[in-house]
Length: 127
Image 1 (cartoon, helix red, strand yellow):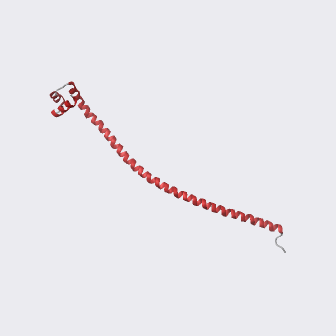
Image 2 (cartoon, rainbow, N blue to C red):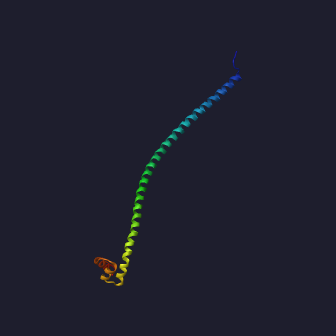
Image 3 (spheres, rainbow, N blue to C red):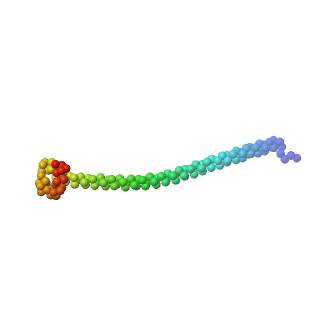
C-alpha cells in the first residue's frame, strides 16, 4: 500500500522546492544585509573620527576667538584712552592759538599757567 499517490507526492515536492528556494533567498538576503551592516558600521566609525576632529578644531577656534576678543577689548580700551588724550590736546589748543596769534613767552606763562619750558616748546613748535 502506497501512503501517497503521485499527485500528492508532486505537491509535496513542489512545496519543498518552494520552501528550499525561499530559504535560499533568505540566506542570500541575510548575507547581503550583513555586508550592508558592516559597511554602515565602517561609515559610522569614520564619521565618529571626523566628529572628534571637528570637536578638536572647534576647541582651537574657541581659544583663538577668546584671544581675539581680548585683543579687541584692549584695542577698544586704547581707543577710549585715545579720546581722553584728545581732551588734553584740546586744552593745549587754546595755548597754541595764542602762540599763533603772536603772544610772547611771558604772556603765555602768565595767562595759561605754563612753565617756561612748556611755553618755549610750544612757541618753537607752533610759532
